Length: 191
Image (cartoon, rainbow, N blue to C red):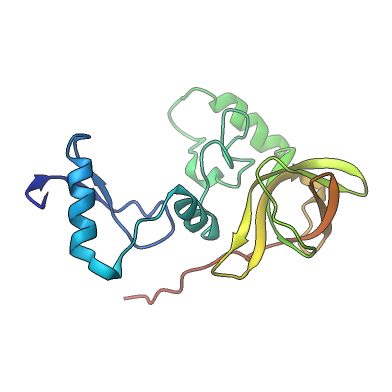
């Protein structure tokens, strides 16, 4: 597809959690395309940064590599086991994942909402009754939900929706509640 006369690859992965598009162009054409899009949008659009992108993907509870998944957090721990086919072809790590699934992951990713004042940030410790039970993978104030929410990787035995936990914010325990279904859910009509 051509945009402003420049050949572009346009995709719609939805990785931000919103209806949008990604444009792939040669690096030397990117500034030109950027300026042309801003001109065409006039007062109806404005540039935003990665913080806004991260908030959009987070409000929709979309995982980000390096936060909800990484070399030390498996898809099973992150609640994404449905993306992993353990029956069928061999792949690197399959044996470890099969064992983890049989034994049930020792850690799980949970949703939480802050009860006390404070914004949970990545890598803040999570405690229960003074004992460390995990850490925040992503947390922020959700503009859409108008409250502070987060995701945390915690020990499985503490995963009880409705249970209170403490998020350690600047060495102070701030109350939060484990939830389920507290994140933004886009309401769409079936066709």
